[in-house]
Image (tube, rainbow, N blue to C red; front, side, top):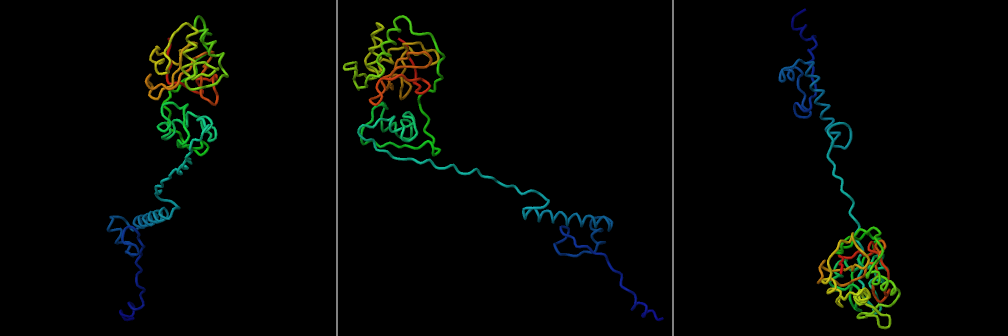
Length: 285
């Protein structure tokens, strides 16, 4: 048979090819031998390399789609935004007290006094408010946070010795006035007292003379630790932690952390605890 007839019937040699992704551009078909030569590998190892490249791209595509194998995509998780506190404006009416206003909003009077700009509105004496003053209030149930108080945090002292000596008379006098009325400027007439009038009279029963005004009483004492109190010590509340900023005074009676104070016109003379109403500092005469 002629040579050219044989050539016509000979099947052309099929060249193995592989689609390589990542070695050449996507969709390009290269001869397997060319891939092997380009990477100094055998055709079989080139097949493995091409398969690996294909798997790598598949993994990358799956990762980009949010699933499958491949490198994880970084994800940022944000904390939910805190609910904004509900702040109310309150206009003081005749007969209002700070403690009464506070209880209506689930706050203590100390919180009301220290909250926002209320301290500037009320002034240095939180026991004295006037009709027409505008206060800012917020319900504690709404997640609101009050401005931190400048009043010193005090740990209730351990029960100490009972009052003795002259101070026993001072403590007994103060305790005998519990339940009487508060009156600004009161010194005992008609059973009316203000804070410093009560402490001055109590000390007089112990044979000790102290000034009439609370700030002057603070200046006349020697400071003692709130954790080392004795019956008869005086407790002071100050707007600046100093004697000049004192706006309230009480007498420590014990045992535990109890004291007696002429508080305000709504409650009069009462027994209170340091853990509930911590003073700024204490003084001893």
